[in-house]
Image 1 (spheres, rainbow, N blue to C red):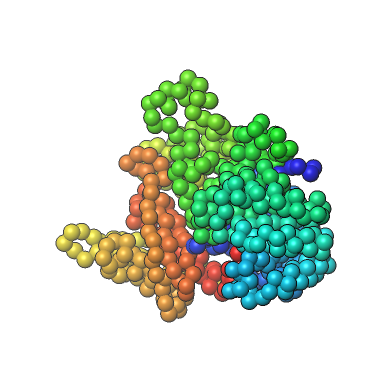
Image 2 (cartoon, rainbow, N blue to C red):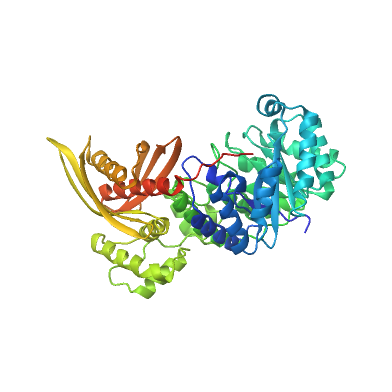
Length: 525
Protein backbone atom coordinates (compact mmCIF):
# COMPACT_ATOMS: atom_id res chain seq x y z
CA UNK A 1 0.00 0.00 0.00
CA UNK A 2 1.71 3.14 -1.28
CA UNK A 3 0.64 5.59 1.44
CA UNK A 4 0.93 3.30 4.45
CA UNK A 5 3.39 4.68 6.99
CA UNK A 6 6.22 2.17 7.43
CA UNK A 7 7.68 1.92 10.94
CA UNK A 8 11.40 1.20 10.84
CA UNK A 9 12.64 0.42 14.35
CA UNK A 10 16.34 1.02 15.04
CA UNK A 11 16.31 0.40 18.81
CA UNK A 12 18.78 -2.46 18.41
CA UNK A 13 21.16 -0.38 16.29
CA UNK A 14 20.96 3.36 16.93
CA UNK A 15 19.23 2.83 20.27
CA UNK A 16 22.02 0.60 21.53
CA UNK A 17 24.48 3.39 20.71
CA UNK A 18 23.07 5.34 23.67
CA UNK A 19 25.88 5.97 26.15
CA UNK A 20 25.90 3.09 28.63
CA UNK A 21 23.48 0.88 26.70
CA UNK A 22 24.98 -2.49 25.87
CA UNK A 23 22.90 -5.51 24.90
CA UNK A 24 24.09 -9.08 24.53
CA UNK A 25 22.83 -11.41 21.82
CA UNK A 26 20.08 -13.01 23.92
CA UNK A 27 18.78 -9.62 25.04
CA UNK A 28 18.69 -8.36 21.44
CA UNK A 29 16.71 -11.42 20.37
CA UNK A 30 14.27 -10.89 23.24
CA UNK A 31 13.68 -7.26 22.25
CA UNK A 32 13.38 -8.22 18.57
CA UNK A 33 10.67 -10.74 19.48
CA UNK A 34 8.72 -8.06 21.32
CA UNK A 35 9.15 -5.62 18.41
CA UNK A 36 7.66 -8.29 16.16
CA UNK A 37 4.66 -8.62 18.49
CA UNK A 38 4.35 -4.83 18.51
CA UNK A 39 4.02 -5.01 14.73
CA UNK A 40 6.91 -2.91 13.44
CA UNK A 41 7.55 -3.28 9.71
CA UNK A 42 11.36 -3.33 9.84
CA UNK A 43 13.85 -4.15 12.59
CA UNK A 44 17.35 -2.74 12.14
CA UNK A 45 19.15 -5.38 14.17
CA UNK A 46 22.68 -3.97 14.28
CA UNK A 47 25.92 -3.33 12.41
CA UNK A 48 27.27 -6.78 11.43
CA UNK A 49 30.80 -5.56 10.61
CA UNK A 50 31.27 -3.88 14.00
CA UNK A 51 31.97 -7.05 16.01
CA UNK A 52 31.44 -10.84 16.02
CA UNK A 53 28.75 -10.32 18.66
CA UNK A 54 26.80 -7.85 16.54
CA UNK A 55 27.13 -10.10 13.47
CA UNK A 56 25.77 -13.05 15.46
CA UNK A 57 22.90 -10.96 16.86
CA UNK A 58 21.81 -9.84 13.38
CA UNK A 59 22.18 -13.37 12.00
CA UNK A 60 20.16 -14.98 14.78
CA UNK A 61 17.44 -12.32 14.63
CA UNK A 62 17.26 -12.87 10.86
CA UNK A 63 16.93 -16.61 11.50
CA UNK A 64 14.57 -16.63 14.49
CA UNK A 65 12.29 -13.60 14.17
CA UNK A 66 9.40 -13.78 11.73
CA UNK A 67 7.18 -10.96 10.51
CA UNK A 68 9.27 -7.80 10.11
CA UNK A 69 11.95 -7.19 7.51
CA UNK A 70 15.35 -7.66 9.19
CA UNK A 71 17.90 -5.00 8.28
CA UNK A 72 21.57 -4.49 8.97
CA UNK A 73 23.53 -1.26 8.65
CA UNK A 74 26.66 -1.05 6.51
CA UNK A 75 28.97 1.76 5.56
CA UNK A 76 29.36 2.29 1.80
CA UNK A 77 32.23 -0.20 1.77
CA UNK A 78 32.31 -3.66 0.23
CA UNK A 79 33.53 -5.42 3.40
CA UNK A 80 30.69 -3.88 5.45
CA UNK A 81 28.09 -4.73 2.82
CA UNK A 82 29.35 -8.29 2.45
CA UNK A 83 29.19 -8.87 6.22
CA UNK A 84 25.69 -7.41 6.28
CA UNK A 85 24.59 -9.59 3.38
CA UNK A 86 25.81 -12.72 5.15
CA UNK A 87 24.17 -11.75 8.45
CA UNK A 88 20.70 -11.12 6.97
CA UNK A 89 20.82 -14.18 4.68
CA UNK A 90 18.61 -16.39 6.95
CA UNK A 91 15.81 -13.79 6.97
CA UNK A 92 12.65 -14.42 4.98
CA UNK A 93 12.90 -10.73 4.07
CA UNK A 94 16.26 -9.04 4.56
CA UNK A 95 17.47 -5.51 3.89
CA UNK A 96 20.90 -3.94 3.55
CA UNK A 97 20.97 -0.35 4.76
CA UNK A 98 24.04 1.42 3.45
CA UNK A 99 25.05 5.03 3.92
CA UNK A 100 27.58 7.75 3.22
CA UNK A 101 27.74 11.39 4.27
CA UNK A 102 26.60 14.05 1.80
CA UNK A 103 27.03 17.38 3.63
CA UNK A 104 29.98 19.56 2.69
CA UNK A 105 31.00 19.58 6.36
CA UNK A 106 31.37 15.80 6.40
CA UNK A 107 32.91 15.65 2.93
CA UNK A 108 35.61 18.15 3.82
CA UNK A 109 36.49 17.18 7.38
CA UNK A 110 35.53 13.49 7.75
CA UNK A 111 35.64 11.85 4.33
CA UNK A 112 38.08 14.26 2.65
CA UNK A 113 36.39 13.53 -0.67
CA UNK A 114 34.71 15.54 -3.41
CA UNK A 115 31.01 15.44 -4.18
CA UNK A 116 31.67 13.46 -7.36
CA UNK A 117 33.72 10.87 -5.48
CA UNK A 118 30.96 10.38 -2.90
CA UNK A 119 28.34 10.11 -5.63
CA UNK A 120 30.37 7.37 -7.31
CA UNK A 121 30.90 5.50 -4.02
CA UNK A 122 27.16 5.61 -3.28
CA UNK A 123 26.25 4.19 -6.70
CA UNK A 124 28.89 1.47 -6.51
CA UNK A 125 27.88 0.43 -2.98
CA UNK A 126 24.19 0.16 -3.82
CA UNK A 127 24.94 -1.98 -6.87
CA UNK A 128 27.17 -4.22 -4.76
CA UNK A 129 24.47 -4.54 -2.06
CA UNK A 130 22.00 -5.64 -4.73
CA UNK A 131 24.09 -8.79 -5.17
CA UNK A 132 22.84 -9.92 -1.74
CA UNK A 133 19.24 -8.64 -1.69
CA UNK A 134 16.74 -6.72 -3.79
CA UNK A 135 15.83 -4.64 -0.73
CA UNK A 136 18.49 -1.94 -0.41
CA UNK A 137 18.11 1.28 1.56
CA UNK A 138 20.42 4.22 1.02
CA UNK A 139 20.97 6.98 3.59
CA UNK A 140 22.49 10.36 2.83
CA UNK A 141 24.13 10.99 6.20
CA UNK A 142 23.71 14.57 7.45
CA UNK A 143 21.18 15.24 4.68
CA UNK A 144 19.68 17.98 6.83
CA UNK A 145 22.82 20.09 6.31
CA UNK A 146 23.57 18.99 2.74
CA UNK A 147 23.40 21.25 -0.30
CA UNK A 148 19.90 20.66 -1.66
CA UNK A 149 20.84 20.49 -5.35
CA UNK A 150 23.54 17.92 -4.57
CA UNK A 151 21.14 15.99 -2.34
CA UNK A 152 18.69 15.76 -5.26
CA UNK A 153 21.48 14.47 -7.53
CA UNK A 154 22.62 11.75 -5.15
CA UNK A 155 19.06 10.63 -4.38
CA UNK A 156 18.30 10.30 -8.08
CA UNK A 157 21.55 8.39 -8.66
CA UNK A 158 20.88 6.09 -5.69
CA UNK A 159 17.44 5.14 -6.99
CA UNK A 160 18.83 4.56 -10.47
CA UNK A 161 21.53 2.30 -8.95
CA UNK A 162 18.85 0.13 -7.31
CA UNK A 163 17.94 1.59 -3.91
CA UNK A 164 14.27 0.94 -3.14
CA UNK A 165 14.25 3.12 -0.02
CA UNK A 166 15.90 6.52 0.31
CA UNK A 167 16.49 7.77 3.84
CA UNK A 168 16.94 11.46 4.64
CA UNK A 169 18.53 11.69 8.11
CA UNK A 170 18.64 14.81 10.24
CA UNK A 171 21.78 13.29 11.76
CA UNK A 172 22.59 16.08 14.20
CA UNK A 173 19.01 17.14 15.00
CA UNK A 174 19.54 20.57 13.43
CA UNK A 175 16.37 21.02 11.35
CA UNK A 176 13.09 22.63 12.38
CA UNK A 177 9.78 21.14 11.21
CA UNK A 178 8.86 23.63 8.48
CA UNK A 179 12.39 23.52 7.05
CA UNK A 180 12.59 19.73 7.14
CA UNK A 181 9.14 19.40 5.60
CA UNK A 182 10.19 21.64 2.71
CA UNK A 183 13.26 19.44 2.13
CA UNK A 184 11.04 16.37 1.78
CA UNK A 185 8.55 18.24 -0.41
CA UNK A 186 11.39 19.51 -2.59
CA UNK A 187 12.76 15.99 -3.10
CA UNK A 188 9.30 14.72 -4.03
CA UNK A 189 9.01 17.48 -6.64
CA UNK A 190 12.58 17.67 -7.95
CA UNK A 191 13.80 14.06 -8.17
CA UNK A 192 12.34 12.60 -11.38
CA UNK A 193 12.46 8.92 -10.29
CA UNK A 194 11.40 9.45 -6.68
CA UNK A 195 8.18 7.47 -7.33
CA UNK A 196 10.32 4.32 -7.66
CA UNK A 197 11.43 4.45 -4.01
CA UNK A 198 9.99 4.91 -0.53
CA UNK A 199 11.16 8.16 1.04
CA UNK A 200 12.24 7.69 4.66
CA UNK A 201 13.34 9.98 7.49
CA UNK A 202 15.63 9.41 10.47
CA UNK A 203 15.48 12.34 12.89
CA UNK A 204 17.61 12.98 15.97
CA UNK A 205 16.45 14.88 19.02
CA UNK A 206 19.29 17.31 19.76
CA UNK A 207 16.86 20.26 19.74
CA UNK A 208 13.87 18.22 20.94
CA UNK A 209 12.29 18.24 17.47
CA UNK A 210 12.78 14.68 16.21
CA UNK A 211 9.11 13.69 16.45
CA UNK A 212 7.86 17.01 15.07
CA UNK A 213 10.30 16.81 12.16
CA UNK A 214 9.21 13.24 11.39
CA UNK A 215 5.53 14.18 11.33
CA UNK A 216 6.28 17.21 9.15
CA UNK A 217 8.16 14.92 6.76
CA UNK A 218 5.18 12.55 6.56
CA UNK A 219 2.85 15.45 5.80
CA UNK A 220 5.12 16.33 2.87
CA UNK A 221 5.48 12.89 1.29
CA UNK A 222 7.77 10.69 3.43
CA UNK A 223 6.29 7.25 4.03
CA UNK A 224 8.85 5.59 6.34
CA UNK A 225 9.76 6.80 9.81
CA UNK A 226 12.90 5.51 11.52
CA UNK A 227 12.54 5.56 15.29
CA UNK A 228 13.38 3.84 18.57
CA UNK A 229 11.50 2.66 21.64
CA UNK A 230 11.57 5.37 24.34
CA UNK A 231 13.44 7.60 21.86
CA UNK A 232 16.82 6.22 22.93
CA UNK A 233 19.89 6.66 20.76
CA UNK A 234 22.98 8.75 20.06
CA UNK A 235 23.35 11.90 22.17
CA UNK A 236 19.81 13.24 22.89
CA UNK A 237 18.26 10.23 21.17
CA UNK A 238 16.05 9.48 18.18
CA UNK A 239 12.49 10.04 17.16
CA UNK A 240 10.33 8.10 19.63
CA UNK A 241 8.30 5.23 18.15
CA UNK A 242 5.53 5.48 20.70
CA UNK A 243 5.14 9.22 20.04
CA UNK A 244 4.88 9.06 16.24
CA UNK A 245 2.59 6.01 16.33
CA UNK A 246 0.17 7.61 18.80
CA UNK A 247 0.24 10.94 16.92
CA UNK A 248 -0.70 9.12 13.74
CA UNK A 249 -3.47 7.24 15.54
CA UNK A 250 -4.81 10.09 17.70
CA UNK A 251 -4.75 12.69 14.91
CA UNK A 252 -5.76 10.42 12.04
CA UNK A 253 -8.72 12.64 11.07
CA UNK A 254 -6.42 15.64 10.68
CA UNK A 255 -3.77 13.65 8.81
CA UNK A 256 -6.28 12.01 6.47
CA UNK A 257 -5.99 14.91 4.02
CA UNK A 258 -2.34 13.99 3.45
CA UNK A 259 -3.34 10.54 2.19
CA UNK A 260 -1.72 8.73 5.10
CA UNK A 261 -2.60 5.12 5.90
CA UNK A 262 -1.90 4.15 9.51
CA UNK A 263 0.83 1.62 10.34
CA UNK A 264 -0.35 -1.77 11.60
CA UNK A 265 0.99 -1.37 15.12
CA UNK A 266 -0.58 -3.16 18.09
CA UNK A 267 -0.52 -0.11 20.35
CA UNK A 268 -1.51 -2.21 23.38
CA UNK A 269 2.04 -3.63 23.20
CA UNK A 270 3.72 -0.20 23.50
CA UNK A 271 4.01 -0.07 27.30
CA UNK A 272 5.31 -3.65 27.53
CA UNK A 273 7.93 -2.92 24.88
CA UNK A 274 8.97 0.29 26.62
CA UNK A 275 9.45 -1.48 29.95
CA UNK A 276 11.44 -4.31 28.38
CA UNK A 277 13.81 -1.96 26.56
CA UNK A 278 14.26 0.18 29.67
CA UNK A 279 15.03 -2.88 31.75
CA UNK A 280 17.52 -4.52 29.40
CA UNK A 281 19.37 -1.33 28.43
CA UNK A 282 19.36 0.05 31.97
CA UNK A 283 18.07 3.40 30.68
CA UNK A 284 15.11 4.60 32.78
CA UNK A 285 12.11 6.34 31.27
CA UNK A 286 11.69 9.89 32.56
CA UNK A 287 8.43 10.31 34.53
CA UNK A 288 7.04 12.99 32.19
CA UNK A 289 7.92 11.09 29.00
CA UNK A 290 5.05 11.22 26.53
CA UNK A 291 2.94 8.04 26.23
CA UNK A 292 5.05 5.72 28.44
CA UNK A 293 6.23 7.91 31.36
CA UNK A 294 4.86 7.15 34.82
CA UNK A 295 3.12 10.55 34.86
CA UNK A 296 1.68 10.27 31.33
CA UNK A 297 -1.77 9.34 32.68
CA UNK A 298 -1.43 10.79 36.21
CA UNK A 299 -3.59 13.71 37.32
CA UNK A 300 -2.78 15.63 40.48
CA UNK A 301 -4.48 18.99 39.98
CA UNK A 302 -7.97 19.04 41.54
CA UNK A 303 -9.59 20.52 38.43
CA UNK A 304 -8.03 17.80 36.28
CA UNK A 305 -9.05 15.03 38.67
CA UNK A 306 -12.62 16.29 38.74
CA UNK A 307 -12.76 16.44 34.95
CA UNK A 308 -11.29 12.97 34.45
CA UNK A 309 -13.70 11.44 36.97
CA UNK A 310 -16.62 13.01 35.12
CA UNK A 311 -15.33 12.27 31.61
CA UNK A 312 -11.80 11.02 30.90
CA UNK A 313 -11.82 12.75 27.51
CA UNK A 314 -11.62 16.13 29.31
CA UNK A 315 -7.93 15.64 30.07
CA UNK A 316 -6.95 12.37 28.35
CA UNK A 317 -6.65 12.30 24.57
CA UNK A 318 -5.97 8.55 24.68
CA UNK A 319 -6.74 5.86 27.24
CA UNK A 320 -4.05 4.13 29.31
CA UNK A 321 -5.25 0.78 27.99
CA UNK A 322 -4.80 1.89 24.36
CA UNK A 323 -1.03 1.80 24.90
CA UNK A 324 -1.06 -1.15 27.29
CA UNK A 325 -0.72 0.72 30.58
CA UNK A 326 -2.34 -1.35 33.37
CA UNK A 327 -5.48 0.31 34.69
CA UNK A 328 -4.64 -0.56 38.30
CA UNK A 329 -1.33 -0.48 40.11
CA UNK A 330 -2.34 -2.56 43.15
CA UNK A 331 -1.91 -6.26 42.54
CA UNK A 332 -0.95 -9.38 44.45
CA UNK A 333 -0.30 -10.05 48.14
CA UNK A 334 1.24 -12.67 50.41
CA UNK A 335 -1.75 -15.01 50.02
CA UNK A 336 -1.67 -15.00 46.22
CA UNK A 337 -0.89 -18.26 44.46
CA UNK A 338 1.51 -19.23 41.71
CA UNK A 339 -1.21 -19.28 39.02
CA UNK A 340 -2.31 -15.72 39.78
CA UNK A 341 1.32 -14.63 39.83
CA UNK A 342 1.97 -16.22 36.40
CA UNK A 343 -1.15 -14.56 35.00
CA UNK A 344 0.01 -11.17 36.29
CA UNK A 345 3.42 -11.63 34.62
CA UNK A 346 1.62 -12.24 31.32
CA UNK A 347 -0.64 -9.20 31.82
CA UNK A 348 2.41 -7.03 32.38
CA UNK A 349 4.00 -8.32 29.18
CA UNK A 350 6.90 -9.99 30.95
CA UNK A 351 8.15 -12.96 28.96
CA UNK A 352 9.41 -15.41 31.58
CA UNK A 353 10.32 -19.01 30.86
CA UNK A 354 8.50 -21.75 32.76
CA UNK A 355 11.71 -22.64 34.55
CA UNK A 356 12.11 -19.08 35.85
CA UNK A 357 8.57 -18.64 37.18
CA UNK A 358 9.24 -20.75 40.30
CA UNK A 359 12.32 -18.78 41.32
CA UNK A 360 10.52 -15.49 40.61
CA UNK A 361 7.52 -16.62 42.64
CA UNK A 362 9.84 -17.45 45.53
CA UNK A 363 11.36 -13.95 45.28
CA UNK A 364 7.84 -12.50 45.16
CA UNK A 365 6.91 -14.33 48.37
CA UNK A 366 10.05 -13.00 50.07
CA UNK A 367 9.02 -9.51 48.99
CA UNK A 368 5.49 -9.88 50.42
CA UNK A 369 7.06 -10.59 53.81
CA UNK A 370 8.96 -7.29 53.58
CA UNK A 371 6.23 -5.13 51.99
CA UNK A 372 2.66 -4.74 53.10
CA UNK A 373 1.50 -3.93 49.58
CA UNK A 374 2.97 -5.19 46.32
CA UNK A 375 2.48 -3.12 43.17
CA UNK A 376 2.84 -3.88 39.46
CA UNK A 377 6.09 -1.93 39.47
CA UNK A 378 7.48 -4.19 42.22
CA UNK A 379 6.73 -7.32 40.20
CA UNK A 380 8.26 -5.72 37.10
CA UNK A 381 11.40 -4.90 39.06
CA UNK A 382 11.70 -8.53 40.22
CA UNK A 383 11.19 -9.90 36.72
CA UNK A 384 13.47 -7.37 35.07
CA UNK A 385 16.24 -8.21 37.51
CA UNK A 386 15.81 -11.88 36.66
CA UNK A 387 15.76 -11.21 32.89
CA UNK A 388 18.85 -8.99 32.99
CA UNK A 389 20.70 -11.57 35.06
CA UNK A 390 20.48 -14.53 32.70
CA UNK A 391 24.13 -14.31 31.74
CA UNK A 392 25.56 -13.06 35.03
CA UNK A 393 28.72 -14.59 36.41
CA UNK A 394 28.60 -12.78 39.78
CA UNK A 395 25.58 -12.93 42.08
CA UNK A 396 25.24 -11.64 45.62
CA UNK A 397 25.07 -14.21 48.41
CA UNK A 398 25.70 -12.16 51.53
CA UNK A 399 26.63 -8.67 52.68
CA UNK A 400 27.30 -7.04 56.03
CA UNK A 401 27.65 -3.29 56.53
CA UNK A 402 29.05 -1.44 59.53
CA UNK A 403 28.44 2.30 59.38
CA UNK A 404 27.65 5.23 61.63
CA UNK A 405 28.48 8.82 62.48
CA UNK A 406 31.59 7.95 64.49
CA UNK A 407 32.84 4.78 62.79
CA UNK A 408 34.62 4.08 59.52
CA UNK A 409 32.12 2.49 57.13
CA UNK A 410 33.10 -1.07 56.27
CA UNK A 411 31.51 -3.72 54.09
CA UNK A 412 31.90 -7.48 53.80
CA UNK A 413 30.63 -8.91 50.54
CA UNK A 414 30.28 -12.57 49.56
CA UNK A 415 29.38 -13.51 45.99
CA UNK A 416 28.80 -16.60 43.92
CA UNK A 417 31.07 -16.81 40.90
CA UNK A 418 30.04 -18.95 37.94
CA UNK A 419 31.99 -19.22 34.70
CA UNK A 420 32.64 -21.99 32.16
CA UNK A 421 30.65 -24.48 34.27
CA UNK A 422 32.85 -23.74 37.29
CA UNK A 423 31.39 -22.35 40.50
CA UNK A 424 33.21 -20.67 43.35
CA UNK A 425 32.58 -18.22 46.17
CA UNK A 426 34.57 -15.08 46.93
CA UNK A 427 34.46 -12.90 50.00
CA UNK A 428 36.20 -9.61 50.66
CA UNK A 429 35.97 -6.71 53.09
CA UNK A 430 36.79 -3.04 52.52
CA UNK A 431 36.18 0.41 53.94
CA UNK A 432 35.07 3.59 52.22
CA UNK A 433 33.53 7.04 52.53
CA UNK A 434 30.12 5.50 53.14
CA UNK A 435 28.42 2.09 53.14
CA UNK A 436 27.91 2.03 49.35
CA UNK A 437 31.47 3.16 48.65
CA UNK A 438 32.79 0.50 51.02
CA UNK A 439 30.66 -2.20 49.34
CA UNK A 440 31.91 -1.16 45.89
CA UNK A 441 35.54 -1.31 47.05
CA UNK A 442 34.93 -4.84 48.36
CA UNK A 443 33.42 -5.86 45.01
CA UNK A 444 36.43 -4.37 43.19
CA UNK A 445 38.72 -6.56 45.30
CA UNK A 446 36.64 -9.64 44.46
CA UNK A 447 36.71 -8.85 40.74
CA UNK A 448 40.47 -8.30 40.77
CA UNK A 449 40.95 -11.69 42.42
CA UNK A 450 38.37 -13.65 40.38
CA UNK A 451 38.99 -12.15 36.92
CA UNK A 452 42.54 -10.81 37.33
CA UNK A 453 41.49 -7.34 36.12
CA UNK A 454 44.24 -4.77 36.51
CA UNK A 455 41.82 -1.85 36.50
CA UNK A 456 38.37 -1.45 38.02
CA UNK A 457 35.36 0.51 36.72
CA UNK A 458 35.21 4.22 37.51
CA UNK A 459 31.84 5.35 38.82
CA UNK A 460 30.27 8.08 36.65
CA UNK A 461 26.77 8.36 38.07
CA UNK A 462 24.65 6.88 40.84
CA UNK A 463 20.91 7.43 41.19
CA UNK A 464 18.14 5.91 43.26
CA UNK A 465 14.38 6.13 42.94
CA UNK A 466 11.37 4.52 44.54
CA UNK A 467 9.88 1.72 42.44
CA UNK A 468 6.45 2.20 44.01
CA UNK A 469 4.79 4.17 46.80
CA UNK A 470 5.01 3.81 50.56
CA UNK A 471 7.74 3.73 53.20
CA UNK A 472 8.41 0.06 52.40
CA UNK A 473 8.88 0.66 48.68
CA UNK A 474 11.66 -1.03 46.76
CA UNK A 475 14.59 1.18 45.86
CA UNK A 476 15.71 1.04 42.21
CA UNK A 477 19.40 1.94 41.90
CA UNK A 478 20.94 2.79 38.54
CA UNK A 479 24.72 3.01 38.29
CA UNK A 480 26.84 4.18 35.37
CA UNK A 481 30.52 3.32 35.31
CA UNK A 482 33.36 3.77 32.83
CA UNK A 483 35.64 0.89 31.95
CA UNK A 484 38.38 1.20 29.32
CA UNK A 485 36.69 4.27 27.86
CA UNK A 486 33.25 2.64 27.54
CA UNK A 487 30.25 3.50 29.73
CA UNK A 488 28.16 0.67 31.20
CA UNK A 489 24.85 0.92 33.06
CA UNK A 490 23.70 -1.40 35.85
CA UNK A 491 20.44 -1.73 37.71
CA UNK A 492 19.37 -3.33 40.99
CA UNK A 493 16.20 -3.29 43.08
CA UNK A 494 15.51 -4.16 46.72
CA UNK A 495 13.64 -2.86 49.76
CA UNK A 496 17.15 -2.38 51.19
CA UNK A 497 18.87 0.41 49.25
CA UNK A 498 22.34 -0.90 50.15
CA UNK A 499 21.44 -4.29 48.67
CA UNK A 500 19.99 -2.56 45.60
CA UNK A 501 23.24 -0.58 45.26
CA UNK A 502 25.35 -3.73 45.47
CA UNK A 503 23.18 -5.52 42.90
CA UNK A 504 23.39 -2.60 40.47
CA UNK A 505 27.20 -2.54 40.65
CA UNK A 506 27.40 -6.31 40.21
CA UNK A 507 25.14 -5.85 37.17
CA UNK A 508 27.72 -3.42 35.75
CA UNK A 509 30.55 -5.88 36.45
CA UNK A 510 28.64 -8.66 34.70
CA UNK A 511 28.02 -6.51 31.63
CA UNK A 512 31.68 -5.53 31.43
CA UNK A 513 32.78 -9.15 31.81
CA UNK A 514 30.42 -10.19 29.02
CA UNK A 515 31.51 -7.39 26.66
CA UNK A 516 35.20 -7.35 27.56
CA UNK A 517 36.15 -9.50 24.60
CA UNK A 518 34.23 -7.27 22.17
CA UNK A 519 35.40 -3.94 20.77
CA UNK A 520 32.36 -2.13 19.37
CA UNK A 521 32.74 0.43 16.59
CA UNK A 522 30.32 3.34 16.76
CA UNK A 523 28.61 4.04 13.45
CA UNK A 524 25.85 6.63 13.32
CA UNK A 525 23.59 8.26 10.77
